[in-house]
Length: 295
Image (cartoon, helix red, strand yellow):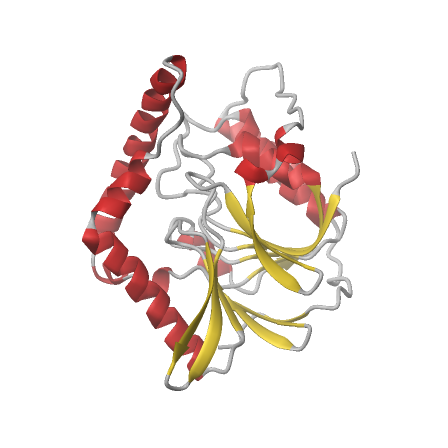
């Protein structure tokens, strides 16, 4: 199968290690594309809720697929989010084509693009982290209930529904939070003369132009792989939202799961470390100019 070429792909909020993660669908998407650069924009592995009892083979397969990009010397930028914030202390770490950084500034086709996860602008995260963690557990439980509801709904010949989306859309505070988040991000991006600003965190895929008295900026959000199954793609001088639900090619890819039982966490970690044994190499020239610590 010929893979679809993409200049830059931005993926966030995968939440590997949780029941809500759609690892199989993500794996199909990753195997359907040929990217020149990959940006993992936070909450890739959900360290908050990581459990030794739940790490399916498909979750490890996603990790190995990302490692395969590195093996082919495709630049991979990992920007930790709040759920994998433990990795922020490794800012500046580089191995092969992998670079861990807290924020990323790219110059693409002469335009400045600012990329970061976005939790720094979440008031709850900054002042009540315990409440945010509690909310994450509740969200994961809601996703589990949603799967049961959808199973029953499909058996009855009805379509799928998203309980979490209905809750968000029905709570005025949630809508107000999203609007406030986007406004704050865009105001700072405009002040710093960026043409584009890219976030994750709020699980709300979006591309729109936001203006204030000082100028305008294109705001983009990559969404998530829990509910929306979306990513951002840059190709042919244009940004777009990728939606798995609209991709019949990716959906047709067969995923052969390992027949043997899932290894114990210690064995899986040893396997992952073996996968990481590659020689450091400079990032290949890709026509994209990175500045990982620009404001």
